[in-house]
Amino acid sequence: MPLDQIENRSLSRHAMSAELLDAETELLLAYAWRDDRDEQALHRLITAYMRLAISMAARFRRYGAPMNELVQEASVGLMKAAEKFDPDRGVRFSTYAVWWIKSSVQDYVMRNWSMVRTGSTSSQKSLFFNLRRVQARLEREAAARGERIEAHKMRELAAAEIGVSLSDVEMMDGRLSGSDFSLNATQATDEEGREWIETLEDPAAGAAEQVEDTHDNARLRDWLLLAMQSLNARERLIIRERKLRDETRTLESLGQELGLSKERVRQLEAAAFTKMRKTLQEHAPEISHFL
Image (cartoon, rainbow, N blue to C red; front, side, top):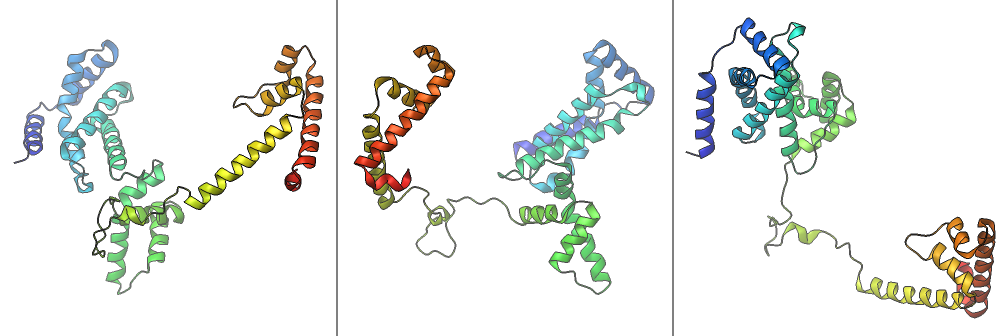
C-alpha cells in the first residue's frame, strides 16, 4: 500500500477522533485566539475542524491531485479561516471556514492541473469547476426530450447557465479537452520513432540569413566609420554619447561637460548629422535612398 494512503488514513482517523465543539466552546476558543493569541485555543479549534478540511479536500480528488496534498491545502485554508474569523459576527466557525478551505483547495487544483496557467479570475474558476457538470446536465435534459444539442449551442447554453461570456466558455472548453503532453513523446504514427519536438520549426536564422546579416552589418559599420571621420573631436563625442551608447546621455549632461548650453549641444548634434549625411552621399551613393 502506498505510503501516502497510509498517511491519509492515519490523518483521517485522528481527525475523526477529535472533539466536537459546541457553539459556546467554539466561541470561547475563537475569542481566546483573537484577543489573547492563545495557541492552545487555536490548536483545539483547528483540530476539531480538521475533519471538515479532509471532507472538503476529498471532493476534489477527481482532478488527479494526490489526496495528501489536497489535505495540506485544505489545512492551509482552515488556518487562514481561523486567523481571519471574527466571533462577534455571530456566525459559526465551520460556516465561515468552508469558504476558505474550498478556495484554498481550488486554487491549488487550478495551479497544478496543467503546466499552462488555466486562469485565475472568478469566472474562469467557476468555469473550471462547473463547466463539465453543467454540460452533462444539459445533455441529460436534452436526451430526455429526445433532442441533441450541437457543440456551439451547448457552449452558448453553458455560458448563460454559469453567467460568463461565450468566449470564456470556448477557451475553457478547449483547455479541458486535453491534458499536457511532452514534446519528447514519440509520434504514434512515425515508424522511425521521431519525437514531437522534431516537428517544431527552428527559430534560429538559416545559414543564408546569417551570411546576409553578417554582410549587412559589416557594410553598416564601414558606413558609420566613414561618416564619423568627417566630424571633429567634439562632434564625434556628441554623436557617440547621444546615439551610440547603450545608455545615452542628455543634452544637459553633455553641455555641462563641454561648457556649452543645452541648446548649443543640440545645434552641434544637428550639424554633425548634416555632415555625416553629406559624406555618405558623396562617398557611398548606394546608401542615398536610406538617408
